[in-house]
Length: 317
Image (cartoon, rainbow, N blue to C red; front, side, top):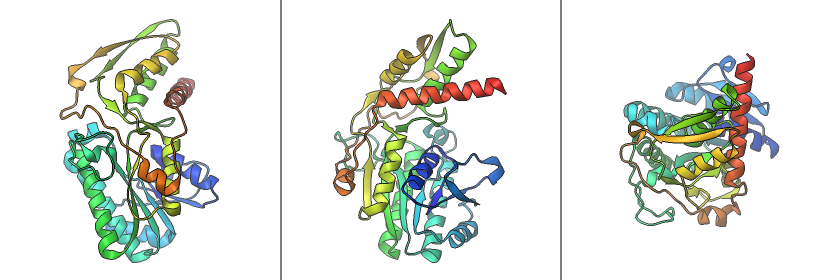
């Protein structure tokens, strides 16, 4: 089986989960192997930039996968606002080239194409199911909606076996600080290391937004189960509950070893912000039996502990 974006946040967790199920994991990424931190469970690594059609085709031909988990993407909403064309180019072109490569070199493979709950945009109703209209409100969401359309095209026209996951917010140990819970956790861990007896101020954007967070370890378990037996189609991967960003920060502040204060910076408030995103996982659960298992408090505790370890290791070096 092949995982694109193997060195990313979800990629590493997925590799460990798949290996635990007895799968031989091959990872794909655009950076040289020497520059990539790979989980021990990855049996082999292929360097390929999926924006290059020939490279994508060669990688799929070389690995001959029976399953493909397509996680490689530019995944930051904030970065997508700064360079919309780059986000569209990376996410859509990479997906189309991968689907073409599978069509030519591994047409019997099952493929998981990972999208986002952001595709829905402003909700007409909550929770949002898979029939909810898609009205993307940021360039990242637009790129994911376009990628899903491409996946549906390759399934309908070329007969590829593609399952489409719409993953809502996920969090957990190993996440980059481009994302809200990891950003808060890193700031707290660094402040603790600087002055264990001190206090700190976290600068934030809008804390009243509500998002549907699932632990990344639950998310990758859903990905595995979807390719194990779900019929082709679109499936929400979410907890089915929303939480305020303010409550994320409050939980991390409670877990902190120092006093944490907060200040809102208007410059960090995003344009076109959707105030609440919340899905339902009923279709996923009916198809696979999946349910979220890890409580959000545990997710945030593990995230903070991971950043503490990372900060300590950096200080040691």
